[in-house]
Structures are given as structure tokens and as C-alpha cells.
Image (cartoon, rainbow, N blue to C red; front, side, top):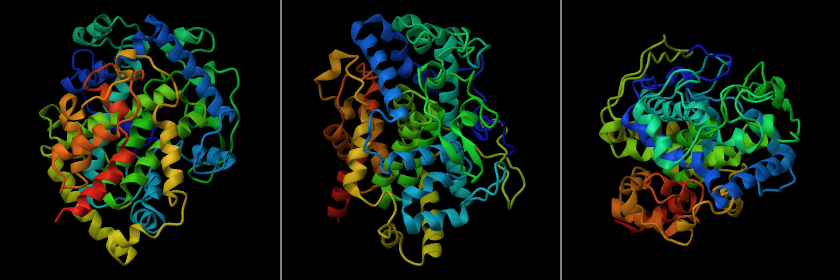
Length: 464
């Protein structure tokens, strides 16, 4: 795949459905789910959440707020710089969550040669990765411009049905630009809206060091260019985080022995966008929620998500000619095939069973208590309550979003969907967050997949 100036391939992986008259049912569901961000300025609690978003983001980026990160802050800054590139072709950069041994086995097969060329994992794995990334990538890209200025790409009008989303919720575009004194088109602001932290925060700490390709870089060249120019790329939701969670959860499902650690890798990847100065905490939470929602619907084989044509997806690898990825009509079955193929490849590379190799880890994800503490710190970022009506409630995941349980049953097939949803309900995080308005989408913002995966694994092992 020929890479753009962004250094990523997700734009080429977009499903051809985000035009003015072509928002799909899946696109519209994502926009409706994310829409509460556009109405936060209508209430005192929403305004407080917006203010907290600004303060927390700045505090994390400058190190004033000390998170329980997996690495010391200076080292985490360097990890954030390496994480600025997106290895969407094969998820290579996320594979360190698989552990020292399995991660090395995966990356021996799947790695990037340069910014444009990469080697492939087994074909079945590459196909589910491409389809999953294109699904969430389409929703994320559309959401960026929709919540910035009510368009699909900054200029092209969305459908009338999409525009009613603002009216229905009492929302308006550019919530961050309006709240943080950088409305769309103002001096120093994003031309389209929702200016990023490096455009709004009073201080952005510089980060210098080698990037993913070991080239000397800093966060400026990955925020303002020339490597990645985000000055006119709206902030919400975070596309990097959407990719990071979608990719990490795909690896978690394909390698269930590392499910909790892959959830932590996803959280780290999203959090690194805050450390870099590229995104707000709300952007990261929005990307996480969108990815988990989309993946659950894919795993449920929701008809709205199946057989969607990929727009001229050319996967250029070191070993094959560009090819158009096929559409997928049974994602759950495709994942099962990919899991079997990846298991064979990993076992051949590591010389033992996946379960045994998964335990061979002396990297930054090897301390369960540190993993738990870090993930917990990213669950809400302490932004406060924007929706008091859900703050003190336990939301029944099975009743609100029954497909959510597929996030666990796909990895732990001995569990029933009912058991999986009960685990998700029992482990869910605090309510009342800025997306948690009682909707079927909003409940995904409360899912604690780190805790849920641990319980699911225990229950699965206890079953015959």
C-alpha cells in the first residue's frame, strides 16, 4: 500500500460509504453514539466535563499529572513518539502486548520494512485485520469531520438523516473549539473545527527521540508536520486510538492467553496520543468506545456490518503484489479461521504451545498489578460526571447491548453470550461519563475489558 504523508494506510482502507448521500446504517449508529459530545455545553455538568478534559489533557501531557504508566514518564514519552506511526497493515507495533516471546514470534513474520512496505501475517489474519480496521476507520474519519463542522470530509455535506443527529440531541459542531477559545478557522485553530491540544493548550512539552523507524524526530513533526500534519485534522474521536483498540482487541481475540495484556497495550497506545499532545482524554475515550462497539457488531455478524465493500484496498507487502481485499460475509467464522492459522504460525516460530510462549514475558506488560493500575487510570480519566442520570446505576449490558458479549465469547468460546454479558455488567466501570447517556452505544464506554477478560478466562478454564 502506498503510504500518504500521514504515514498510515487507514485512509486507503476506508469503506466507500462516507459520502454526502451514502452514510450507512453502521456509520449513522456510530455518529449517534458519539453525539453526546456535541451537547456537553448545554448543561453545567457537561461544561464541567469539558473543562476537566482540557485540564487533565494538559496535566498528562506536561507530566503535572503523574499516571501509573508502565514506563517512567521520560521513557513513556519515547514510547509515545514511537507510537505516532500506525502499523495498520499488520498490527506489528501493537504485538509487543503479546509478550516477549510471542511478540517476537509475531513480529518476525509481520513487520515494516519502511513507511510504505511491510511483510504479512497469514492471509486469513491480514483479511480480518483489514476488514476490522476499515470498518472502524470509516466511522472514525467520518466522525472527525461530522463533529467538527457537520460534513463528511470537511467540505462535503452529510445526508439529511445524519444532520438530524445534532437536532435530536440538541448538539452543535466544534464543541472543543468553542469551549477552548479556538473556534473553527480562527487564528491558530483547525480550519474545520475541534482544534487539537497542541493548538489549544497553553503549554506543550517537547518530546525528542527516535521514532518507530529509529529516525530522529519530535512530537512537532508528528503533530504539525512534515511527517504527520494534524493542524487541520479535527481531534474527536482519536483515529489512532480507534486503530489501537481495534487492532489490540483483534490480537486479544486471536491470542486469548494475552487478552488482558492486549487491552492494556490498547490503553497505552491511546494514552500515548495525549502524551504526544495530539489528543484530549475525551478523544481517546471516544476512540476506545467506537472500536469496541464496532468490533462487537462485527463479531455478532450484524448484517449492517457484513459484506461491506472495501474501497480499492491495495495491500502492498514485501512478498506480494497489490491486491483488493475481499469483503467478509461471516466475520466470526473468518476470525476463527484466522485464529487457527495464527496459532500455527506462532507455535512454529516460538517452538512451543501458544499458552506456554504467552507466559514467557519479561517486558513492560509482565506485572499484572501495574497493568491493572494503569488501565484503571484510563477508564474515565477522572473527567467527572456529565450524565447524572446514569452515574449511580448499574447498566445491564445484556439488556442494552446484547452483542457486547461477543467481545468475550469470540476469545473464550466455552462461555455463553449470557455469561459473557453478565461478566461485562459485573465488571463495568463508573457511570455518568460524557458518552454514557443510557444508550446502547454509551454503555460501551463503561466496559472494563481488562477485568472482564480475567474473569472470562477463569470461568472458561473451569468448564469441561
